[in-house]
Image 1 (cartoon, rainbow, N blue to C red):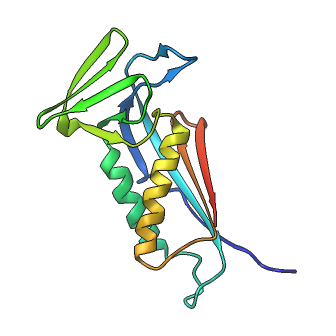
Image 2 (image 1 turned 120 degrees about the vertical axis):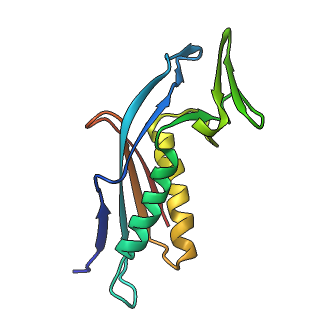
Length: 161
């Protein structure tokens, strides 16, 4: 029988409060609203020379930095086919059909996603987490990131090496 190892991070500190809206069914756009998101990450892989799948502290600090950068911000998709996001030095203007919003630039996070769904937020967070850990020499065989937007309503993204 072969062993496998996992590390799971699911701390209260991996929470961010943010506003967003999504589109669905082609041309329906939700009203602007917010969530108290919580994030968890699970790493699977062999043990390294320190007997780690991943260093808890490195993973914790990386995930804290990522979620802190999203906290109390307006999350905007920059790759959406019908939502236009235009930023200048001071403001971000967003349009969808006949709707228009203007936000202070410092209150926004422009995300390279097509919609700010929990699934795509999980993907974005996971990509940043993998990049941060790679800089420190960690490359898990598998990563699962979950973004919970409503106490038990999660979007999950999984990477397999």
